[in-house]
Length: 137
Image (tube, rainbow, N blue to C red):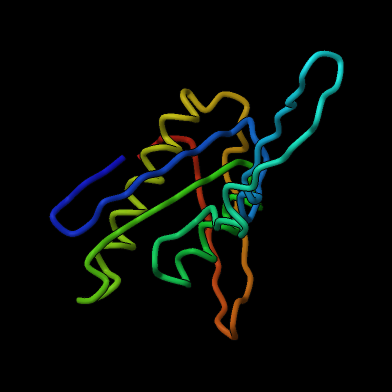
């Protein structure tokens, strides 16, 4: 969780859970009965899927969702910020928060590949990225 003058952010990152684009509609089940007879019932609390990454900046949402998918980990991000001014603080503060969560989740980074790179396109724009986890400055 991170809060600044410009943004409020919540991030959940779990390296042991797999990627999902959306949370499924929530529901609950119960069994009612009198004596030996039981009647099953189901309650739906939400009827639509909920996006797992929602920053208000569509390009940032796609980048974070792709990072989670490619990395094979669960990432849930919610952000409310001063997007009426511009997207700068939202992108900056979300990146800082996700980076801090990854740093904490990875611990001493034992067993990780030292370097990685990827490239791709979305909506006609191309991007490439490289990362290193050696901690060597």
